[in-house]
Image (cartoon, rainbow, N blue to C red; front, side):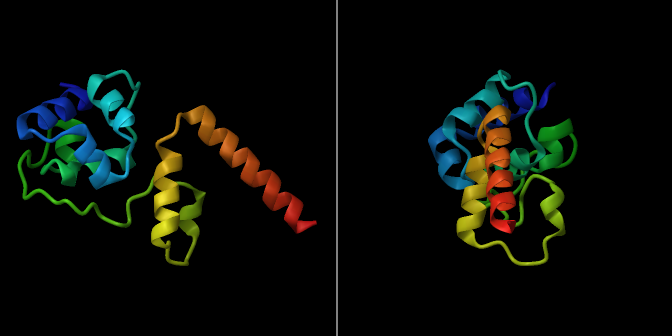
Length: 129
């Protein structure tokens, strides 16, 4: 069974709406629907790390069918979830606003994320001069 199939099965079995998942994880409803339907080519690790606690399961179960399928459901996703990047080397704490922004950016299609990164690069390069 694929991660998208396990995700869809969990959503249906637990009777959780996509809008509730959007509210609990910060991931757009349309993105969650793409993941569960299998239309997304792959589900990013950070997304499963956010969705699993909201669905009352372990990330290992969603990824590979291993680990516990049913654990106490958390409506508060872990605050330290983010997609691994070079920014992992940062030593300062991420604020709630920065985390919200990162979640919104990571939910965008890859092409849009690249455009944002290009724009940030241009801005930071311009400011250094």
